[in-house]
Length: 234
Image (cartoon, rainbow, N blue to C red; front, side, top):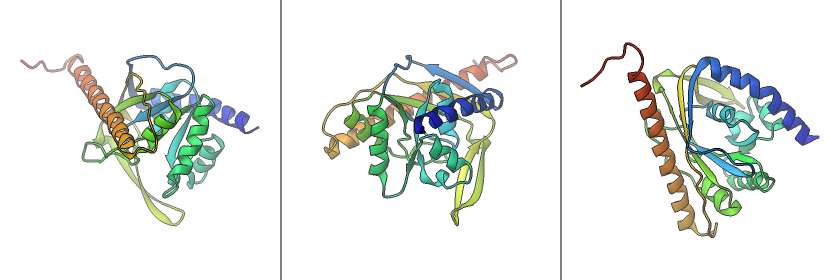
């Protein structure tokens, strides 16, 4: 029954999110290769609160997303996330979330994780990668698909709200260009208890994500220059 509910909710939400991204966002997605069937890890950077939903919309199949526990406490949205099978990441309970994600990978599912663990700095740049993506990759053997997102940070809307009695800040991207570059899969092997290996693996994934985000930005800049009426520079 649980799997049927998850599948049904995915079927209902997919066209809703797709309609939004097609009408409100100028999504430009570039794949360096096709997604294979079976277990895989999607690892994007995280410039806005809506990234989990926007990235999921371009996958074309169901994924299980590791999301900050705060969103699970938001009325209606939290219930949707739970019933859809997405993975709550609670402070000091990271291993529990990793274990749940590994179960999905063992079942041949797609798991999405944001290595930064936080919204990227509003001033630009990226946060240092946390180790979750490395632990998932090493423990499961599943390929990691790095994803680089570029958007216009001046179009982000900051929203303050109270969730479970605590003020929370989110950064929503409601409309504008949203550029995604999906890289080729990365594969890792080794001892998940080797801290140096785990750290190096996480850094390698994050470096690739950063390069792909830069590619997305460059593609956006080229497209802007090629628009009719754009000024030519010599």
